[in-house]
Image (cartoon, rainbow over all chains, first blue to last red; front, side, top):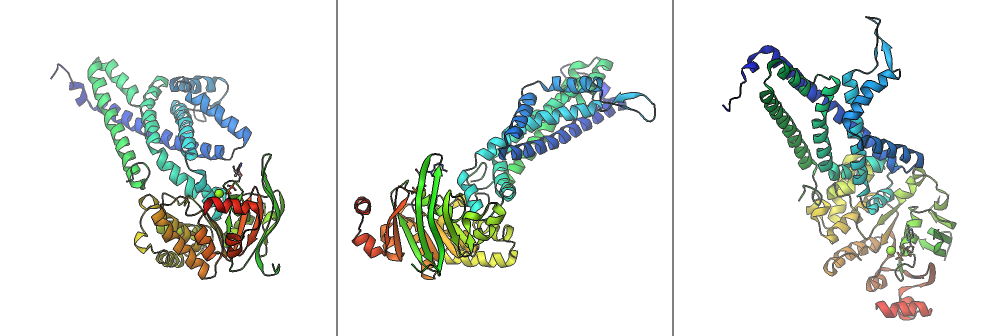
Length: 238
Length: 248
Ligand SMILES: Nc1ncnc2c1ncn2[C@@H]1O[C@H](COP(=O)(O)OP(=O)(O)O)[C@@H](O)[C@H]1O
Ligand SMILES: [Mg+2]
C-alpha cells in the first residue's frame, strides 16, 4: 500500500531495537516526569516560604532551565560536566569514564527542564488560592506545613492538573532529543534502523505512530486523574 | 465590669498597618456566656479586633487575655494551638475548603489538628449538621451549597472544635436576604445555649434581640458601649447617633 515496504519489520533484530527503544523512552519519560514533579513541589513550597535568597536561587534555576533549549542542556551536561572533571575510574577496566552516563545526563536535564516548568505552574496554582481560605485554616489551628499539605496542595494540584498535563506531554516528546547524546531510546534506534534499511519514510511513520499512542495513553491517564480528583466548582467538577 | 470573671479581656490594644493606626486603644471585656455585638462603619476596625483576639494578627501594644491564655505573648503557631481550640471564628466569605464535603470540612481540624478520635468526631459532625439543619447535605461539596448553607456548615465546623468562644465576622453580609434568617436562627440558638459570642454585624434588629451588650466602633476606638436598649434607643455619642441614623 502506497508503496511502503515494511518487510524489515519481520527481522527480530529490528523488532528488538524498537522494543528496547520504546521501553527506554518510556523509562526516561516516567523517571524525568517524577523528578520534575518533585522539583516543582519542593520549589513551589520553598517559594511560598518567602525567603529572599531562596527565592532568588529558585528564580535563577527556573529562568535558566525554562529559557534554554533542552537539547542544549543535554549537550551541556553530556560534554561539559565530564570535561570539567566529573569523571570516575571504572573499577573493572581501570579507564577514566564520565560520572554521568548519557542516560543520566538526559534524565538530569529533562528533570530540570520539566522541574522549572512545574515550579512555575505549581507556584501560580498556589497563588490562585484565596488568602481567606488560608486564614480559615489558621483559625482552625493548622500549622504552616499542615496548611500546605492538607489544604493548599490538594486544592492547587487540582487547579494545576491541566497545566501539568501539558508539561508532561512536552517532556515526553522532548525525550526524543536524547538520541543526539546517544541515549538508546526510540529515536536513536529509529535512526539505526533506517541507516541499515534506507526505509526512512516507513521507519518514521511507524515511530510517529508509537509516539502518538504513548502520548495518548499519557493524556488519557491524566484526564482520568483530573476527573477522579475533581470537585464541584473547580475544573472538571460540576 | 467584674474583672475576675471576664473570659476575654482586651486592654488598650493598638494595631497599625504600616503607618495607618487601625486600632487606637481598644478595651473590652466579655464574660463567660455573654453575647456581645460590635457595630460600626466599614473600616472602623471591627474585623481587626476579632482577628487580634484569636491571634490571626499580632498586636502592637496593650494586652489580650482569653481565659488564662495571654494572647499578646504567643509567638509561634504551635503556641497558638490552645487558643485555636478555645476560640473559633466564622467569616463573611464562609471560607470552606472547596475540595472537601460538608462532613469532611467539619471533621478535618478536630481529627488533623486536635488529634481527636475519628469515629467520635464523625458522630460529633453528624450531630452538628443536624443542629444547623443540614443532615441531608453531609456529602455535598461547598460548590454545591447555597451561601446560607455554606455559612451554616462553617458554623458547624467552628463548633466541632468545641470552642468556648466563637467570633462571627459579618457572617450574613454576603448572603441573600432569604438565607440570612436561617443563619441568624442558628446563631441565636448558640447564644441561647450560653456559648460566648462576639458578633460583628450589620443586622441591627438581630443585635438588639440577641446581644447583652453592644459596642459601637469608629476610627479604631470603641466610642460607646452598653445594653442594646441604651445604644439603639438613647445613644449618647453624636457619632453613634449619626451611624444609627444611616443604617436604621
Ligand atoms: N492586612 C491589612 N493590611 C493593611 N491594612 C489593613 C489590613 N487589614 C485591614 N486593614 C485596614 O484597616 C482598616 C480596618 O479594617 P477592618 O478591621 O477590616 O474594618 P471593618 O471590619 O470595621 O470594616 C481598614 O481601613 C482596612 O483597609
Ligand atoms: Mg470587616
